[in-house]
Length: 289
Image 1 (cartoon, helix red, strand yellow):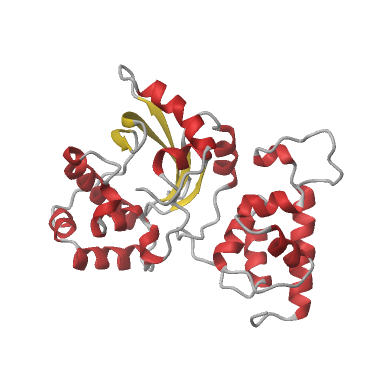
Image 2 (tube, helix red, strand yellow):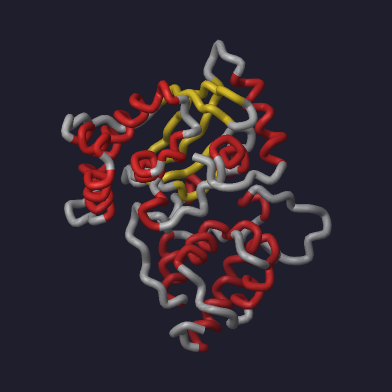
């Protein structure tokens, strides 16, 4: 049970149960159904939304099981649509440190989650300003691959872009230099916007300066530009080349962005994006980009 007391386990279970009963299925994109016997969500629905087994989640509600990890707490907070205060309370009950804003376990802005749930016919995801993917809809997983399995420095797509050649295979090679330049200019803008005491951005920049000569050369040029509306080409493993507009909605503090992808006008990308619905219904394996 880690270092949690039985009283905290009991309160953790009671708190999860109370929040589960409060969430309406429609709030998280689930059909209400005619035979619903419980208020709010069922245990198996919360487990599915959080990427946990039903048995594990049931044990948590019973005040038993093992101490939940920081990643599991973040996933439960999103699944149950917790406010920032409720999310922090859940971390305290689980005896885990509350993560700093802007990191991989960041609390997704509830308004962004709400919008993401409504974007059912277009690929969309919420990322941090350091390009850590926090949550994806089904079509974004089908388009970009599952981004949920990366930990530590590798959670940032920018970090992977400059340190792992495989991270670039979703983009045509002719576009790599342009993407690299845009990522570096965006990272400089994001780092400047963060608090002076922030260590996540500075440690990431320091690591990239040491790991990538390409990054170091571009960093020395001092270009600064947030990525906003972007037109990009993606080389999808099943659908081939897709040209899309990547649109951004920034949170008020600038630490999170809702991205959604629309077909570029004058291309055949609309039909290809429609096919993602079919691919999204199949099992999409492994983090691709």
